[in-house]
Amino acid sequence: MTTTEEARAAVLGATRPEDVFGPAGIDDATRRAARRTFRRIAFLVHPDRAGEATAFARLEQLYRDWQAVAAPAATAGPVVITGRVDSYVVDELIAQGSVASVYRGGGVVLKIARRSASNPLLDGERRAYRALGEMLRDQEWLRPYYPRLVDVAALGDPSGPPRQVNVFAELTGFVTLAQVRRAFPEGLDGRDWAWMYRRLLRAVAGAHLAGVVHGAIVADNVLIQPDEHGVVLAGWSFATPVGRPLPALTKSGQYPPEALAGRPVDGKADIHQLHTLMLDLLAPTEDAQRAYARLCRQDNPRMRPTAAALLEEYDELIGRLYGPRHFRPFTVPTTAV
Image (cartoon, rainbow, N blue to C red; front, side, top):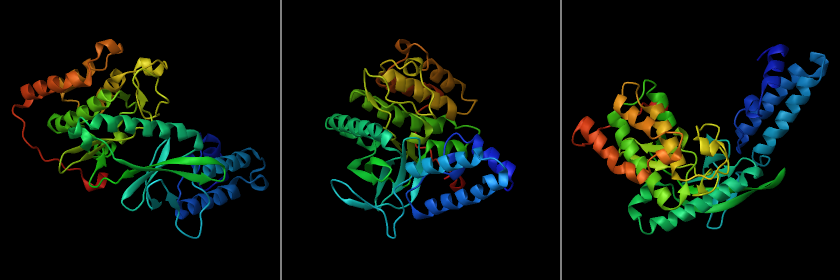
């Protein structure tokens, strides 16, 4: 934006601070970039130049909101977060969600609540991991399908209460299904989707065995390791125990009627989301698998199968379609990562 009119339209049309200043970050470079953006736009929409104060006042409010979402003011040295187990130096921003910002931190990943109002969601994620941990004592073979929570912490914030931080072991060689979707805009071959889905279905079945509804099975929360066909179900901030309403709804998700109505949910809500994701990723020509997915997305949760029941049913389907299973190499172009 180079003119007063363009700057004014951008500011007044913004629905959240990130629309103007970009993702909020804890690092010095991100904060300096936001400050430069504020100064540049402030010059363009200042009342002395624009003739009225509406856009300038809105810009100031957006910048205050952005600072509140971002980390505490930058310091001369690195930002260090101390948990119950260890201390971590905050490094590169690697993901930005509606609930938290995710950073590398020297062999770990730091998931930091963007606002203190999001603390209950990170608390809920911790409870979900405790339930998964109990389940994994008897189902050790499912452990590779979930991130490993290694520590918890809180980050002081001068604008309000401390923000919760969940610390995870770092995964290497993984990409998200959102990146896969960008790499294959024409949709996935059903044979490639088959190994991803079978592993993801196990992760979902394990969650339900633990009494947990994930609540946000979307492309950004599913990680795959293309070379070794690994799958990890991440992003448990929206999780809830079976029989309770979801604590919140992610903007990037499509939800079944019971979740949208705020009613208690069970694993059938995850089944609806999982097969919405399946329809989004599969190529349009994959008629048989797409028909299977639509049957699993029915509005009435009683008409949807359980994840455990689908494990055998899907194997029968892909056996009919493709014959005996064999390893099929899969590569995601580096331009999509």
